[in-house]
Length: 328
Ligand code: PSU
Ligand code: MN
Image (cartoon, helix red, strand yellow):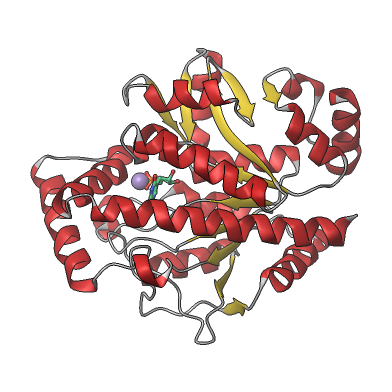
């Protein structure tokens, strides 16, 4: 079955070489779904290794997979375990990853992937890292909480998340609740435009681009998708055109879980000051800010984070089902 899949992918994408397949373990459920052009939703794993504390990370990862299955799609959590790239994890593997000490697993973006695989290490793939692997296999829909973006002090630090670059390089649609206001949202949207990423709001007539903890960022997306079918049609067209660039679908946090804007702003200001006074730099910035915001809001931000990921997983699964109907 695996060989047939490889053949199909080699013919259609000329990417998935035998040498590459020797480094990747694809879960049988994912293999079967891909083989029949069935619905698959990719999930990242930095959220498990660096984004949330144990046991919330494990509970969320398991629930998100269940939500996707309930919509009749197959979840494919992507991570690196002992140097093997895993596409679709068993419950035991999810647990190992979730219990991994932050320092025993690497936050894996493109630049880290060869090293972590070569040295047989463990890694949680970021949105960037996950996009690369999803594209290698031909998975076109991906759900997460929020993506990285242009940091507020990027004019000095040059800190711009590789997530934005990989969205421009990989023909995968990411369902996320936008970017956090720890980042510079207008600059993030400018950078996405430069990278050629199609940005759409989800079920917002005003095309409001969400700000993760809150429903609106004050910025507008270029387009709006009113439902899963409309999203699937645009994704399908993007694939047919062979543009090789991604789509960002900004799904807002459900109303009952949205946070008070002033509380969020105050927590973010505080967290950014703490990051500065502790000289936090580079890849450590996002995980540091996330955990401080959670501390400052007494866990409320974590609850919101969990609620929006679940919502995004459901939307992504529905889109993947519609896309599969278009492609079979
Ligand atoms: N935003 C969140 N939770 C997360 C992340 C972002 O709300 O866990 C993670 C994602 O894996 C994302 C990464 O791809 O942080 C971006 O990190 P950086 O800003 O270092 O590129
Ligand atoms: Mn960064």
